[in-house]
Length: 243
Image (cartoon, rainbow, N blue to C red; front, side, top):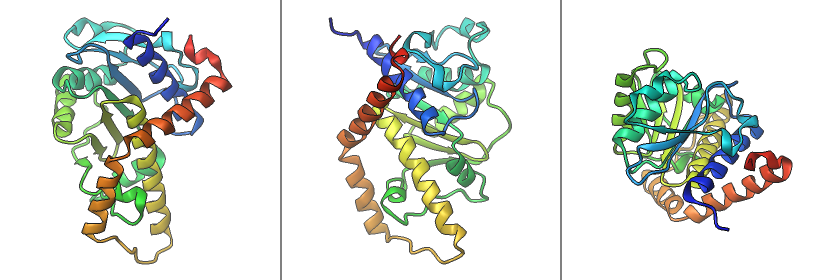
């Protein structure tokens, strides 16, 4: 019997948590991913408070309503997750998936005085002129006003480099979002490694960087396949992700 849309999303989102933990990109029992279930985007799945990514199963994911303020009072709902993801899914119906992480290299770039990802290779060029930057970090994002502000910064872009904080990647598809945040962390790792040599960077021309970024946008099937291969690995490693 075919799976429902919600069942499919639950499995894919649960698998994405397992993959991120497998890759060591998680942050203890913090950080959150969400995926819209309803057509208007306001009903969405979210990981429960303080559950390790490596243990999340499809059935563990919470189904929340962005219009229902009482969700903020539920003990299994993290305040920062509700503030950010609740506002995002309430205000941006085109966002079907949102992944917020504090990966080491991307977060390192976010702490710089002028956060920037210069195009020095194929991975970094994927983000040429395609990342919004927030430089207004004021502590943990635990208010709806802060969630609304961050949503505003994502209105015209799918990625937000959160200064002194981490990153948010949004998409229409879980597989695309996963590959995007994986490639972003890879790009920042390459950049930090290159900077660590102390030598001048050979930055690509705007023309080449733009062409490369556009070429990335043409191969969403590559992103989905990357996710499907990693999902299969997670299921083989521990089938409980499907439960």
